[in-house]
Image (spheres, rainbow, N blue to C red):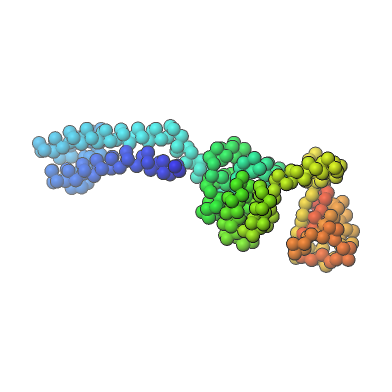
Length: 334
């Protein structure tokens, strides 16, 4: 049950009873005593609240008996509503509601972020890598225990099923850079991919596949990239046994810890002075110290690219270097 539903369920009854007492009391005084509605409301409020400023007008015998009943039922209804409200606050529901509103506000302010669907073992590792890259992201999960772990890790969360368009909208899919679906169930990943692709035709989607036969289905559903954690783990373990030096070098590029090399892809802007230069000239202009490894054009990766190929706007250049070197190269691509 959502917080809003719990609030209506816990407080709706007591507040409704109190409201009914106020309405019945007002109508009663108007009928029995012939008072105006202003005088009747004033009398009911002062009676029910036990303030007791005195009678607005002298009461008839019927009015006195009616007032006795109003005191018994009205004061009881007032304390019933007050007790329910106090219990709701002290049980933390109101605090949780405020925290949820604050979380929704922070998510709404996100732009150019990543949407991570699923916070299991794979999702937690993805979140660590995104956090290490200082990439903003929001976690979607239907499991409250997983969301509690994400909150403990200080991540932004949205509770709900990622196949729901409303949930994806609340996660800011219209402003996101990419979506990563890492749910343990392949069918769920397919449905998430279909929903996200229907909402954003241009959105890069990275999907998890546990079984090999799921890979073509995810691609057909609209996934830009499909990753099998088990296949990747097996491949890396085999390479560590056969080519440990090469794997260590690649991991150094990917992790870039301790001031080591970093691997980064940069898009060449239309205004970049690199447009129209050859790959040979590009390597000469990279006086920053960064090393050109590959160029991706129209979805095709050229590694290494031909030395006479001319750089065009929209090309993605893959570079290796230290963080200062890559920041200088980024200026050249702008």
